[in-house]
Length: 314
Image 1 (cartoon, helix red, strand yellow):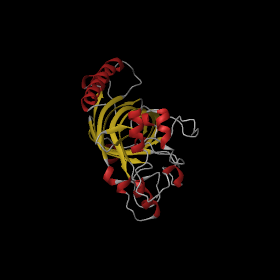
Image 2 (tube, rainbow, N blue to C red):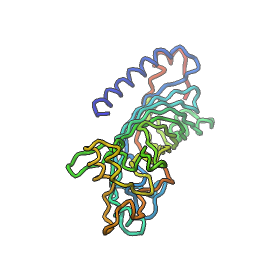
Image 3 (cartoon, helix red, strand yellow):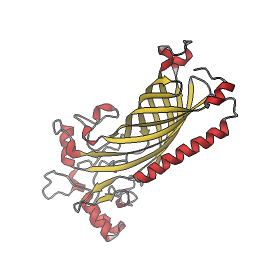
Image 4 (cartoon, rainbow, N blue to C red):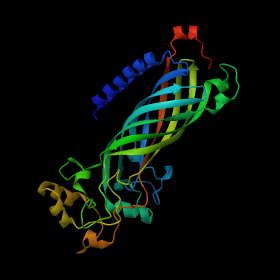
């Protein structure tokens, strides 16, 4: 998705929210709708790159040099004051590079010498629920417990990715069609093809400050658990025989695949990567990504005039 397409999607998102608002104004169970926008750093956790030591599923293995920016929009629907139903879109990018490994411990040295890298655009849609514990506490309006609202979030979504690597000619090449780990090859039955649109599970925490009853600012951290180890196109604990690319790919793709499947700095001598015993990745842990964002949001329902008819207390 290009930047222009994402801007058009945001515009469509706003128009649809206004249309939905008009359709919902007569529904008594809907107490409030908020439209929000957020942006902030996006981090990848996978086989490539990383920090000192063995890879980790959480924050310990962040490769700070590969930090990217994510942006998104969301709608929050409040059936009551302490629960919000949320739907949103998110766009960003993730990447990893073994050359950023610290080259200190044995694990870092392995990744440094493996010398692989990737990047991928990321587009996501999701839905979930937010829980506001402070709103269960009786408080005075505009008190500190009314203005500051911590919350927990959980949801499910779909995301699209497309891992790429830069070839020696400077071109960024889509990696999935090259099947660098023998995906779908009869000789490697354990290496399965993967699709570029997959499900994820989102969870996180956030904090909002209500400047007034119509506007808030806030921050949140959302972690995405995904069900593939191929977001960086690296997973198997072996290198395949590069001669097989000629059997399964076009001549042009086979040439690129032979350049990109192995870029190691090991001194193998006459031994081929397929017979070296070196693992290409770790199939035991799936990849993941998470983002920290700053938010701004606005109440779009009820309108002021409808509040005079049917006051809503927050």
